[in-house]
Image (cartoon, rainbow, N blue to C red; front, side, top):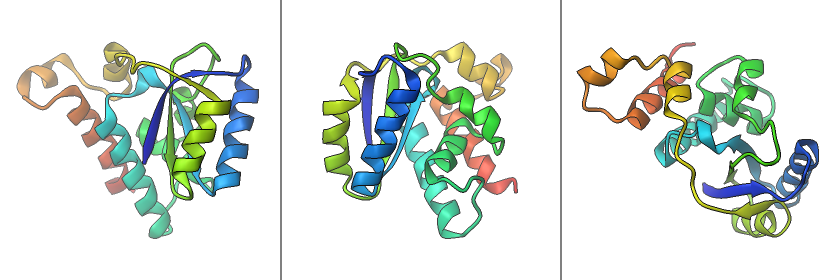
Length: 162
């Protein structure tokens, strides 16, 4: 798994997503763009990739498309429509693009050339994450587990709760 943080080079979201699809197809890679403010950390994304891969191996997928499967796990939901909340709404939003499988190195190189202007990793929108994943103040006070750890726990439950 490789992560590319930055902003889209295209000014429209559909054009950006079309370029990602083209690059993924060319390199045999699964590519998914996420609004970076929804990301609790790298461990959050690594766990989502692992769970999506495992669901495909066991033929227990949520979605037919591997990139959509990945998005569902990042969002911790079986509802595709709801998972789309984590997608890109505005081409000026910070993004993290996840690249797995195929010739990931070539896909990342092309992503940086054609689709993503690399940039800094933005801080997560913690209140938004807490609301989405139902992380309460009481829960935060009762544990030493980080917010990212709590998010990883929530998305892991998706694989168990069938």
